[in-house]
Image (cartoon, rainbow, N blue to C red; front, side, top):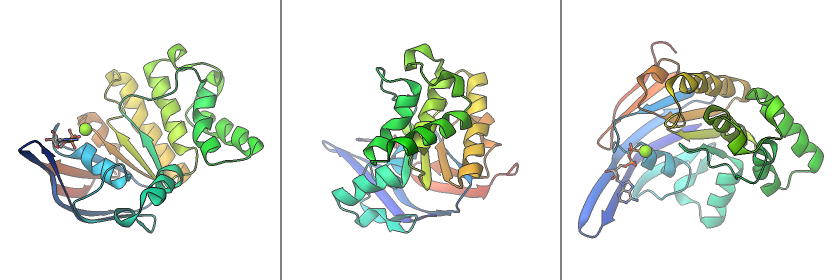
Length: 228
Ligand code: ADP
Ligand code: MG
């Protein structure tokens, strides 16, 4: 599903060089919930951004669902972000003027899905994340955990092959956060999608099928989780 080979990325700010990724390789099968751990600054966000085509690698190759992300042009990257990859960020990033249902519908509109299909998909996804009764509420009328669940539903709208979640529980209290990982796991199973979640929350690691550990831009372990 995901094949990463020798990926490197260096940021230059003035004279300062930061080698955010120094040659990272791994493969992820379909339908797994994978945790990417590592301290702040380890390169987690950089790696997710490279996988999602939000940034370009200096070296190496990234393949997602048979597409070579590293050689796509702007049009190909836009298509990849719309059709193949779903994103969940630390802050939910929902549009405040839209209801939960309308937020989930946004990617479906961008993909020009027909109205009946959009309505059906929105219903299915809100049910999947346990928010059928909150479809008409706007983000400010929802709790932090509910907002993040809407964001997960939105990320799944166009049936992505890969969902990238960057510290999706970072702004939630630990109890609310603990409910998000089982949800992502259920999503990975029911939608057959690979979910890669960056986190440094130890509690969440045991719930994943596989753990990747980044340390200063290098992958130090790539082991299936004992609880997986
Ligand atoms: P993490 O998500 O694990 O906290 P990041 O991938 O955000 O780590 O960052 C890895 C390293 O790259 C850090 O040292 C960070 O300061 C640096 N970095 C990340 N993004 C940029 C950028 N746009 N410009 C310069 N340096 C950056
Ligand atoms: Mg980060």
